[in-house]
Image 1 (spheres, rainbow, N blue to C red):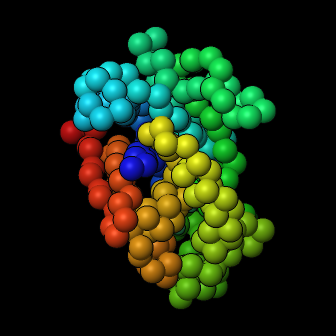
Image 2: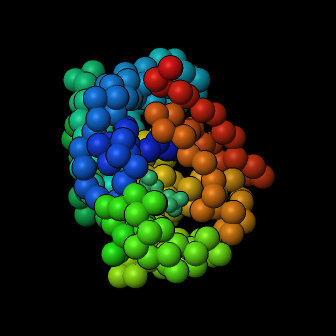
Length: 227
Ligand code: F6P
């Protein structure tokens, strides 16, 4: 089966300040997660333990996706282990793999966080203070609410739609380092949750969620990397 690993970026400088959006770097704790994630990729993701497609514990190819935002790219930065010769380089015309390269992050803007428009960079308290009506409208319908000059969860569903196809196009395990809002939707899709509840799903920080979609269900495992 396909195997997907989902995680949020490590704690960002904005997370520490309680601000939403932006394009900040990682906090020291977030950087610690990035290092732990590299070890996890090496020991969990790129290892074939079941012996079906290769010898047990052999190195397997895997894919690594991030958003275009600094905090996800920084979270991927240590996953460059020379032992991990995994992602195929070849995007040649008939799709045949050409060269082995290291697990290499591929940034997708489709995976960027929900854009909060005029509220980008604010704390929730600041939004409440400066735009009380907007705040109340969002409380009433979080799924459909679109930030002025920004996005709604429904907008994100549209830009994530092609990503689901892309996720399932290859069989290699895939690690996605993205953001809470985006991951809520991908997670809800695979778990078959109603879209109304998706914006409220909790995606804990510093935790990798492993999803294995099966025919009638989706198996889920969680790995808390920083205890
Ligand atoms: O707080 C982290 C964050 O990823 C913000 O950047 C984003 O706006 C928010 O979570 C999404 O959560 P919610 O839709 O619940 O406000």
